[in-house]
Length: 113
Length: 110
Image 1 (tube, chains in turn green, yellow):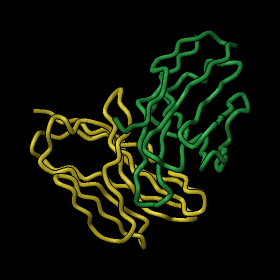
Image 2 (cartoon, helix red, strand yellow; image 1 turned 135 degrees about the vertical axis):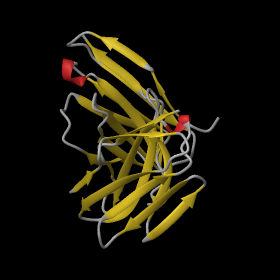
Image 3 (cartoon, each protein chain N blue to C red; image 1 turned 90 degrees about the vertical axis):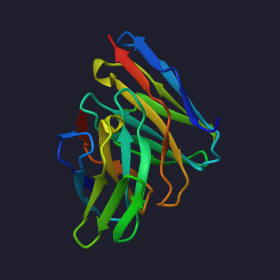
Image 4 (spheres, rainbow over the protein chains, first blue to last red; image 1 turned 90 degrees about the horizontal axis):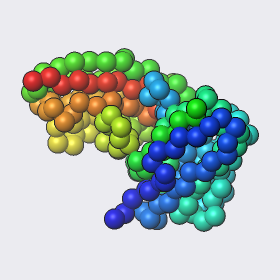
């Protein structure tokens, strides 16, 4: 299946822990993204990578660090998790053309307790 | 920067027509897109307007007026499966960033 796949789907962890979310796309897209969706469903971009190069880094605490080992993978590592980090994190990919839509992964619901 | 405004919720009966409006503000406009998201699911791409006018895809149509910084998504012949949140999103030419509006929840009732 051609898709964007991210793991895990659910993540429950204690405050202060470090966790990672993995994302892979087999669509051949050049650009990958991380979005955060809060409880009010607002989708906010966090990071964007184009061919392994960071091109967008929104105002995100530096506890969040993306890593792109190749253009098909974009992982997100979060250090010292806080309660406010609880949200759904979506990975997405696209081609650069404006007309091409983003393909989103199924999301990772992170709950920090 | 970018900002988008969308109203929040609408309830409609099966078979009805719903129009979801979106006004935007951006420094480098590169198209208006629409996404659908069911509860617990991922956003899925519905349509894209790069130029003024109407784009039709089956029961859904999307319109853009660049001079008014305005667009809408028209959902026709509503079905129960159309109950979802609908987001408009503006792409920025400079960095290819896609900024989403706050979304509009559509609830379809029998």
